[in-house]
Length: 68
Image 1 (cartoon, rainbow, N blue to C red):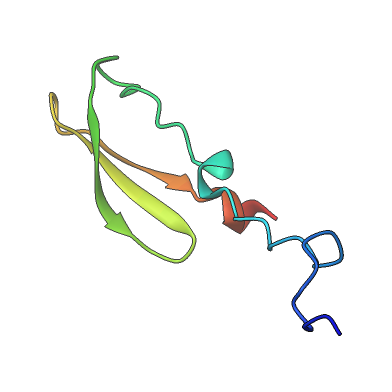
Image 2: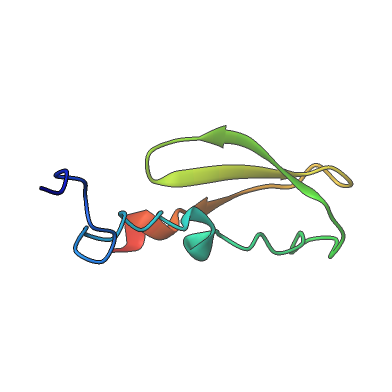
């Protein structure tokens, strides 16, 4: 008699890993001075608050998940 070992061909495939980087937000340079980099100052559930490290301009961006 054979032992009841799992058969690799009949086992279900492992769950796919979620690729979190696919929906990453691209932060554009500052609209005021056109220089960067911008730094995230505050994160809320729906919005990112950004600040330009060069001129100090502050602006917000909606998170990609908040759009859907």
